[in-house]
Image (cartoon, rainbow, N blue to C red; front, side):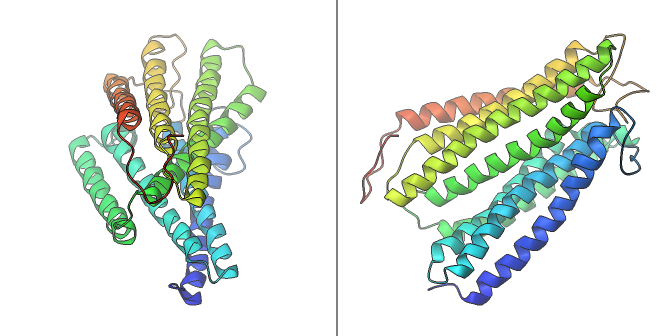
Length: 325
């Protein structure tokens, strides 16, 4: 037994705190604020004067990180109950890395795509400074995540643990994005209006819930296949293919956001997730649509390339059975 009971207990405490913290962020912004910003009624709390996109971003990030933390908490409890099993401790460590990757992705998207949320939309025009801060923060979080991951798994023959971390991160991210948007869709549909712009927003909520949900399901299948492969001591290509496919699905979500923003920019009923409370002083930022297509397109193309490379790459020689699927 490499890890002491103290380490296992500390993991439980830390993951419990992370779950409470990120869970509070998710519940407040994702469920107590976001569904009510659009309709302007029924909110259990005072609605902050923030754009719906910013509120949803905080809620989605909170739920994604909380999901990874819950997985870590479960594995930490299991590791304490099975004190002779060090694999469960390492599995709980994976959730730390998953939270790190989720945080990195959120920061990177703010640097290259959603920078308007914390600049122009909050009456701050120094976009270059904010983007620079986001890039620096992204680098720092990636270093803080990757250094211990490499230290822990750097000598692995097949990088299966790293694949598990990425799959968990992808699943938690898709789940965290889909559920708050689903809550917004349900509430908006239940408080419907014949207004054409209102119907557009309902469709936006449905689309932004459905696409990440598909990505999360693809990643979840990858998680299950990776766990099966680990138990069998084999190396499979399918988890990697599903991981990259889930990335491609999230890229399609960004492209869909750009399409919605571009197509409905000139409608009579101008509603947006980006503007404060979604309605009122409408401002259309062409660069938001353009960056949606660029960033989303790059992600989709990279995902396709990675899938192809994974499928055509030769199998690595392993001591145990290696399977293609």
